[in-house]
Length: 243
Length: 218
Image (cartoon, each protein chain N blue to C red):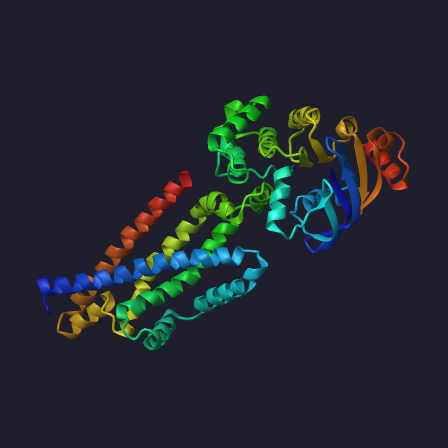
């Protein structure tokens, strides 16, 4: 179980999170929604230790994560992976090397075992024929699916998805959403930041509405989308439904 | 030593040529290695390395702002106290190393910064260590940005080693002066020196260009 308790964090010198608390149980799919700049991505970045916490605590299965300790951070990142909006693939390596690097260097897998695991995942994603391609030779949707495979190759318990469709052409969004949909049935814990509201509503067990670095409302997806309790959530829902 | 093609003259010029080449190659290579360490140190984020980062910054900014001739003199007088037996060519090579390290550190820093930060962030999020990120992601992509200016710097420094003549190192320029002082025509003496500088710089420049093209293909 992942818990964030009263987390404060800054980004580019500006305080972005003002005491965020939320939790995701094992196998739960939790989506963060809210207007741009509300701090959703910073929550994910703070959870995986890319944005330092100014205050607050993150717990994994009850144990507080010590972000100042390299060992603690390493343990955390063996259990938690993130997929970024811009894929963040290594441009000097082919797809297979992108996927196998961390399992070999961080998990200590033998290269052959890591490659076998990577090829199996690429096969599931319909990307087996792209194993030797460079990221620059792939479409945005393919690159994002490779990034998802790279994260999954670490066999994480928790996967953070940070606006994984935001940088894609509209016609590529579907293929990535289908991939996430397939992941949802595997029992992995997903923490999703997305502007694809219909998708969020369909896939999420629970939705967290954020605004100005604070959690405004949280509840089951149908409740938050169908009958929001807070005025800010109601206004947000009115705005996105008008779009 | 008034005949340019006399065996003694050719041997004298050959030795001077080797000194110029040696100072450049050894000094710039050692400077590159130190520059790489300085650039990596300046990128480090560990709190306990803060004093070393500050010293690296001071080193780079300091040696880039001091004329090479002054560095030569500083090394000469510094070494006289610390290692009095070091030959003049060694002192000059050490000075080239110090100057090159500062410039190379900046060239390498620029190359490392040319790799998109998003890739480093992606690697950190996967739990990869700073060493692995540097070796497998940063340096392989930074080389193509580092090599052209580093090679250009080395070719330029072939000429700057002429300043070592102020210490009494008989490198190419000083060899020309000696030959002319002994009666050789200045046109012939310095003409030969000019051709030898060109003969050194041209292949170095071509080799750097070939390496650049090869790196661009990877």
